[in-house]
Length: 80
Image (cartoon, rainbow, N blue to C red; front, side, top):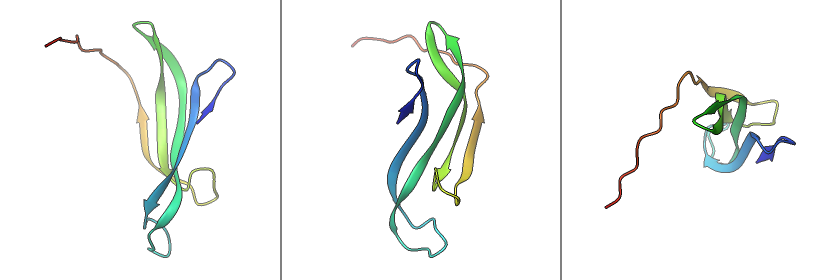
């Protein structure tokens, strides 16, 4: 995980076991993405732009997941 000087997470990378590669061979490969455009929601600072995919931080990176968050609602917790 990479964080900004303010402590906001801006990049997350893990090694993922996958065959989503040109050889279609299962192997560990970088998977992750980028978080940006942080806004406050009920006192929490959260990213409103999220993108991710295979081979993050390489020339083969293809972000197949992209989201622009418009609203965040927190559900009330219940105790049992």
